[in-house]
Image (cartoon, rainbow, N blue to C red):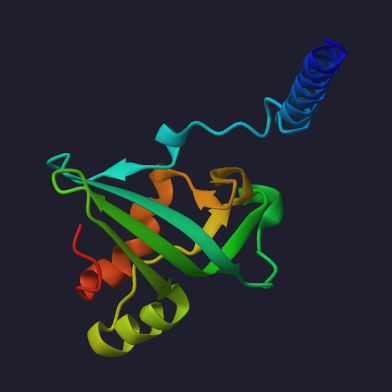
Length: 149
């Protein structure tokens, strides 16, 4: 009978320590309200609602923005990772794009460029660009048929 009591006590002790560990981990993993980003603000859809796109910033330029006092804090993005999800088939496509080289290529081939790589710092959340800036970043890649969205 004493062995059974010891087994019951050890089980109670281990379950209590496990609960304490889980609750401590949960508390330390919480984020503040300022860090929270709604996923819907990062995902854009195509015209027919059959595809989703998400853009992650991979590299930014160290160039200093001009007119900082007028246009605010901005960064010049050089590389992005585009993730496109086809909603009908659940197929996911990813592609890394060097926006700077695509911009140069378009200027050489078609004598114009439409990319605005300067993005306000507030429009980058957790390393992802808000959906309102997606079109500006991929316009040259779309013009050269690197992206069909």
